[in-house]
Image 1 (cartoon, rainbow, N blue to C red):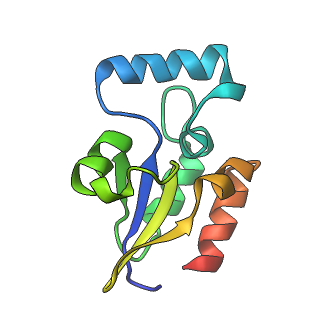
Image 2 (cartoon, helix red, strand yellow; image 1 turned 135 degrees about the horizontal axis):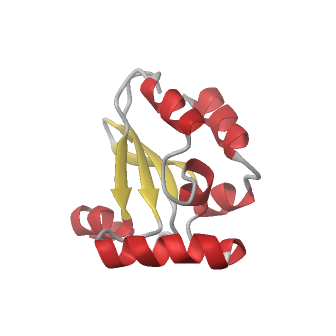
Length: 119
């Protein structure tokens, strides 16, 4: 998978209202927050420094998309549970990590270890 683009799709939509709702949800009910990818890679207000350092070391710049952005360009993925980590190949998009796999991850270290093994 070297030099293939990683695509991270968050189970959250763009916009200020959605951002405010997400922050409130993370603060008041973190256990029910619907985006495990967001919870792993971001604190309440910012990207986790460890994640930022990992992303900067990737060979190819990753793409980060919110649900609405992803589905606008890939409506055929509407039934696929989010969040997702995909990689772009010559044949198209392939799932690297499913929502179920992301939901089982206990912490950011686990995500980084899996991504290191798979890329």
